[in-house]
Amino acid sequence: MAFTALDVKKLREMTNVGMMDCKKALEATDGDLDKAVDWLREKGLAKAAKKADRIAAEGVAYATVIDGVGVIIEVNSETDFAAKTDAFMGLVKSLSEIIAKDAPADVDALKACTYPGTNLTVTEKMQELVMSIGENMKIRRFDRFEGNFSVPYVHAGGSHGVLVNLAVEGDIDATEIGKNVAMQIAAMNAKYWDKSLVPQADVDHELQVQVAAMDNDPKMASKPAQVKEKIAAGKIAAYFKEICLLQQDFVRGDLFTGSVEGYIADAAKKLGGKVTFVNALHYVKGEGIEKKEEDFAAEVAAQIASAGK
Image (tube, rainbow, N blue to C red; front, side, top):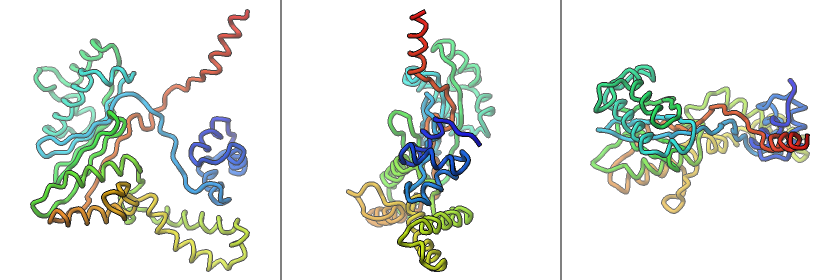
């Protein structure tokens, strides 16, 4: 599999490793990015894989709670300017009301719903807004939590939308707990909510990477295989701490020192109740949407060449 300079750049962004080492990794793995990440980690050059395939698109990721129903939605627009208009945000909030009230099954069902305060469908109302704003708009995805206690969080004007769902026992207000957990999710972007959710295949893969890293370490290479395997198994707790929300270190060290699950238990106890994390949803605006790559340097060079003719 051939690779390009863009692949080298992407691998560098994923691992924070130098360009030449990234090139060597891609050469050694026939251009496979995931295998190249493992190769760098096995050589002790990359501590962790960082996903860098989320290309920003405009619009907003929004979360709210309406009549006890938690709603999260992403609506995209062509420009950031349009996404910040009152008309666009009014659309997002009205769509959230429909989702909370009517529980549409999917985006198509949502588009067929009646838009609040009108006789129009959501599709017809959006067509009106497209005409007035002058940009195309698209409902990309949404979800909802109907039971338990939901807490919304919107980061940086809609770059992240997070909805946390908690089971609450006792007459306590768990809003602050939910918000702090939501902020953790937005900041740390855990791959799994809890270590119990990590597939065994992922755990086995991590063990293989750790053993391979020791094979390439002059201080560890001569140790017996069973010793390396035992050391690798001992490092799995650190692996869970990195990728699992509840096992991560709580980022608000001013409030609690320890894991996220420890923070939840401690904060709930101080309020006189019990809180259990049930689920969460995390939308990143434009996540995975491929946008046209603009090569500014090449564009300028082409203009200079054209002007010289």
